Length: 114
Image (cartoon, rainbow, N blue to C red; front, side, top):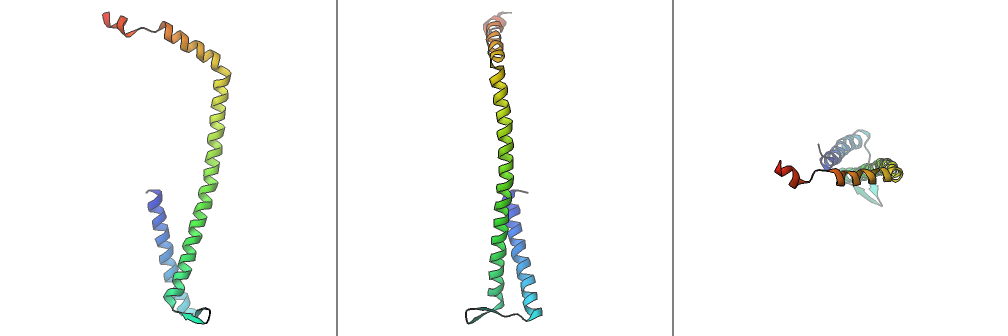
């Protein structure tokens, strides 16, 4: 399952659970939500809670991706630096090997006549 498909399914599940649990909690505990002096109807009250829940999910996702992205970035930087140090130390050997390969290899025209 792709990342964005999983993200959309997680957001839809969050909205659904927030709506179902929110309506049942509002009904069970007979809670009224006011904004200023105006009474909000239950669907609007739940939609506000759902939007807050989705925003919290997105913030948590951003934090998780940032942390794991940083860890992956640091790991790649360590691997690349080790590779560059190895090339820096062994560049004379690699240069001699390349020169020997270029001088001693069979040319295509010689192998075609055989």
